[in-house]
Structure formats: structure tokens, C-alpha cells
Length: 118
Length: 113
Image (cartoon, rainbow over all chains, first blue to last red; front, side, top):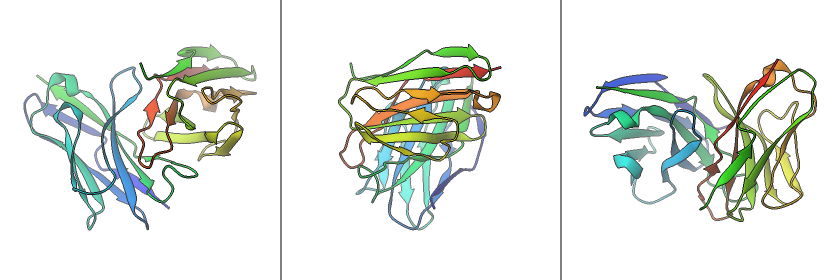
């Protein structure tokens, strides 16, 4: 069965500092990987996704993530954060054989709250 | 504008009083899903639908019902709500292409007293 572990529940960081939000997954088959962001009192918005090809994926708002198959990780990074990046970030995984087929079930991690301080 | 809408956004009710949360999408997506979000647990899938009249259970279906009579609508029904169903609920939709992005509604915050 698939699972997603977000290693940090909260990450405080100062404005303009770099940040890395960690995500590890477990699956016995190939996967698709996603990062979603949830701003306060809003729904989830896709930041980026990895389906295939280059392991470095660039998303919106200057975020990027690197898929590492050997370490089963998909860490999210940003070289310089802004106050407006304060939000909760969710990593999600779906088995590639199922996605777009019978289920498309996303398994979410428990989220990481990023708090950017001035 | 492509969007998923949910109504109501906020609801306070009492134990046992049937309620329906509506979800509608304007992207002609085949797939739709309901999730609940609880602190420290992330999002968990309740039910999903692959197309009209085709639905299946997710990870936490107990106490919920769904229907998909039209492609654009996917209501979530709580026939006899209980306090443990107090949560933040999200509806999502996506298309049939491999790796399609799931689009989420704004959420419905439900409190069951």
C-alpha cells in the first residue's frame, strides 16, 4: 500500500531564506508525485507534479522539487521565501497504473505548515 | 473560469439532522472526489466517482453517501451526522488524461453538535 510521510509538521523560516520541505513515499509500483499548497481559508492549489522525465520539476511561485527514486523522496525547495509563502503544503502520491484509470486516488501526507517570519 | 464550487461554505448542525453538501464543476471532468481534512491527518478520501452513476468508496466512507446523476454535480450526503464528522470537506475533480491535475473546491467547514 502507498503511504506518504512529511517529516516536518511545522517549518518556521525567515523571509528571504531558503527552505526545503521533505516528503518521502512508499510504493511497490511506479508513482506520480504532487505538491499542493493550501493558503489560509482556501482550497488546495497544485504547485507542481512529477509524472515522468526530468527528475527536477519546476512549479509556480518559484518552487521546485526533485524526484529521487532510490531514496523514494520528493522534497520541495525554494531558494528565497516570501511572507506570502506562509501556508500549509501537502505532498501526495498516486500509483501511475491507477491514475487516470479506475481510481486516480491521491494519498496525501499530513501536511507541513510553513511559517515565514519577517 | 475553470472552477469547483461547494455549498455551503460553513454549516453548523445537530446530531442526526440530515444534510447535503453540494459540489459542482464546470470543466466537464469525468472524475470527482470528496475528501475530509482533519488536523494532523491530512486529507483522506471519502468517496470518488469515475463518471455518471459510477461511484466507489475511498478510505473513510462510513457515515457518508454520494450520488452522481449529472456529470457536473457530486453531492455529499450525511444522513445522520455525528460529532466525529465535524471536519473540513473538499470536493475535487479531474479529467481522464494520465496525470491530470485535481482541482479542488474552496472547502466546507462542517460542525456537528
